[in-house]
Image: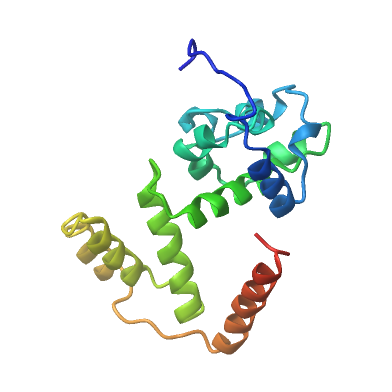
Length: 194
């Protein structure tokens, strides 16, 4: 990948996608001058195909397919180290969130489709129970990912030590949590939230 040739033309650059990412994130990728401070401080950089500054560079060049096809956006921990270190106030953490949203909306399988599945199940648990229900999260993830026996030996140990509960109660403020989700969905319909 380091020595591959990138051909730029009006056909290869999708500036509409870049504008959508900028609108969702509230930050401009054009402000980045590639100093590399974001990548130097990123704790997840060693797991990424493309470091954070290269993600921004791809967006500047309209090469969003390369960004969405990779795993870098899924390894971002949203720790905001990159945003804090940026001398030009580029909110890279918000840009990564917007890219994950765009990838999710595309509904195409990425290299990290299991990460997408885990994210979706995590949010569904929060919406259903008002908090995380680890037993259900692990069981549903293993079934949907096709790894049926993955945690078979680990589960009983966690249960006997009191680290994992068989049964779970809903949060008593579940109505308030549902209102939060409803507000987010209303903002998304208006285009005001990623």
